[in-house]
Image (cartoon, rainbow, N blue to C red; front, side):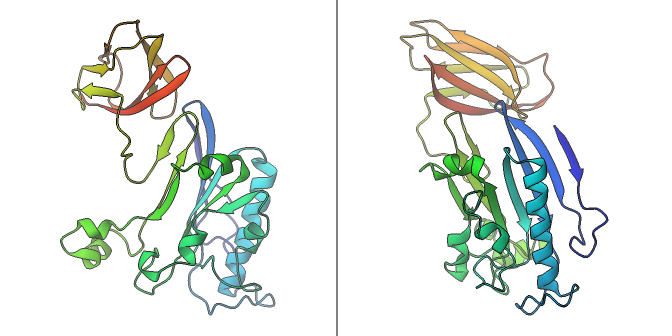
Length: 277
């Protein structure tokens, strides 16, 4: 819906302005705030020195908390990015205390990773875990689902040169990926689901039409087509006793779409569609 920067004049707290993305996915509103806080320091918060690195990061976190409370008090907010600090630090030197001490409103989803093996941390060359995903209570229920997960993705495992190749060509930080499973759809930035599909799509990618094959339905069924922004743009009814449908996508622009297969009132499956031109 919108992308913009905040705190653009507060260079002490935010040497790089946070980037806010307001988005709609599957008819739900989400707020993602991406951050890259000041690096370095000695691990000690010095409240008497406003330019102390830990103090700058702590003040940044407190401003983010205030901004969320004032602007997105009842929204689904994901606070993420390179915070350049450790969730597992002991108070009073934990810059995240404003979030960790307010468990009614915030959850640091990767806290277990921060307390876990250094082999699984996001910044392996130090090693330390500096990249985090903090969510507001509007997302607690989705994240508590057994199908939700948080992990540090080791892309270097799929590269012939390992972490050396990854670091020299992509980043010195590993990505931290989160998957939310809700009653409507799993929103995944990690590994694809291993759940057995109840709907098959071919060809995919396609430049014209998509054919759907499903198990023969014995009740009202529909395939709803959504844009990547979650806008419902088409629907295909599958009548009782039938097992296929075709979506003609010739009038739609190239890009990523989603097909949601609904039988009765239950969502059975969701498939990503790639439309090429």
